[in-house]
Image (tube, rainbow over all chains, first blue to last red; front, top):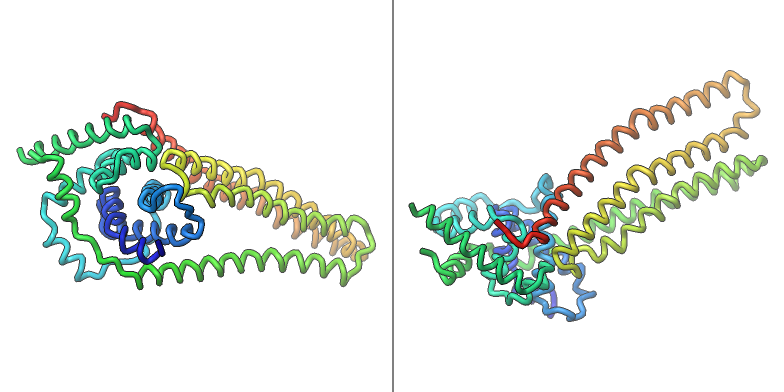
Length: 156
Length: 200
């Protein structure tokens, strides 16, 4: 798979993953771009030991984790003002809530639930985060419970 | 009540900026250019310093062995830093693409610990080698001068070295060590999430 195909296939997924992690549109865009720069750098060394998806998500999640070091860094690309305004009116409150609730979880749980919501197999999630499959399964169950509870609390 | 399906549906409804290949290719081009410039700059500074030291050796043909030792110590100090820093290259290379999240955090801690070591111990050795090297090197060329000039030249040199060693170095080292220590602490805290089976 060439770089452009990988980029077009995974851009949306990686962006959502980053947005779930930081709940900041501009930062998520920077992180997604950073992920694809790493993908481009490492593509010649990719030997199909894992699926392209697992490989890309691994880079994306590690980029997310590295944010603790880069919080003070200047953003790569600012969103055009017009686009930002459009977003504020078009996003449903429920979607905003979901992304906010996820970003309030501990870092590892943000990654796990984002991958789960992207329909990644639990065995692949386990490989990406470095936990056992059973541990991932239990965590997903608990995170979903937690999110459901938060939605309920918000309704009341 | 939100069901699993609802969560996935909501997740996928999020507006996403369009995948613009020209933007990412532009960023890659910029990354290549700045990375290349940085590499060329660092290597040029290193090579020019070594060349100047060798040119001095050849042009001025030092007679005393201590002058030669001084030049060799100067070159050694540069190589010492380069060799110590190069330990990081394999760690940087494997940093984000081959490792799972938990191994990635362990690798980050290792990188930061080496960076800490470079900032403190390696830079101290570099500074000592350079100071001793320069002092030895200067001896032959100040020998023919009057005591007044010798005292003045060595005085200015040692004041400058003293300022660097006692004022600048501790500040830089302390600032950098604090930053790295804070970062290691944050990673270790983050790493604990992998160990706990009970998440809430």
